[in-house]
Each structure stands twice: as structure tokens, then as C-alpha cells.
Image (tube, rainbow, N blue to C red):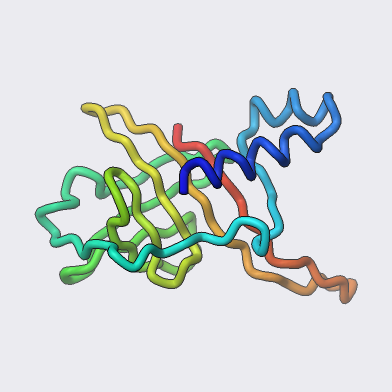
Length: 144
């Protein structure tokens, strides 16, 4: 799955004009049509218990300045970006978590107090005041 995400990101970067590509190196926000890079939920995911994810709970600053928050509620683990709705997440691999609603994917590597990784999220379609419809997008952000 990481290879597919990387291929999609690299494909988008290759398509952008050179000046935009330089800006993309600094800002790691990559809009992709959601239909081109769906967030997959493997059939064999693992439910985690609160003791299993104590070390990843907290807030993480993303490359666009937003904040990813990972919290526990009851026996579930939830993630959300800024004031968005919380998404119940499960472990799908080592350091990889996917929302059950397939709207969010988190790759998080913790080394002591340092964290790195990626957040992939679906931004739903919306209608602007002008009546123009902005289609659903898939965005990728780096953790800082």
C-alpha cells in the first residue's frame, strides 16, 4: 500500500510545472482525486486496546500547520485533524492506522519524543457560494 501511495504522489509531482514542484518540496500537501488513490482498509486489521496505543496518543503538527490528534474513547482509538469529526482507527500494519470509514490513514513512527510519518485524508465534495462544486480530494500531509 505504501508503494501505491508513493507512486500516486510521485505521479502528481511529475505532472506539476517546475516552479510548483519546488514549492511542493517545501509544502508536502498533494491534492489527488480521491477516486485515483482510495484509502484501503485491509480485511485483516487489528483492533487495539488502550494499553497498545498509549505511546501514540497526543497531538502532531502536520506540514500544512494543522494538527492531527489521536485520542482514546472507551476502548476505541480515534484520530482527527483540527476540528474535523473523529474517525475510529484500527491498526493495519506496523505503525499504520486506517479509519474504519476509510476517510483517514496515518503512518506514524515514534522514536523517543520524535515522530515522523504521513497522514492521508479524504476531503469530501463541497459546494461553494458561487454554486461551483469542488470534487472530493485525497490529501497527503507529512508529520513534523
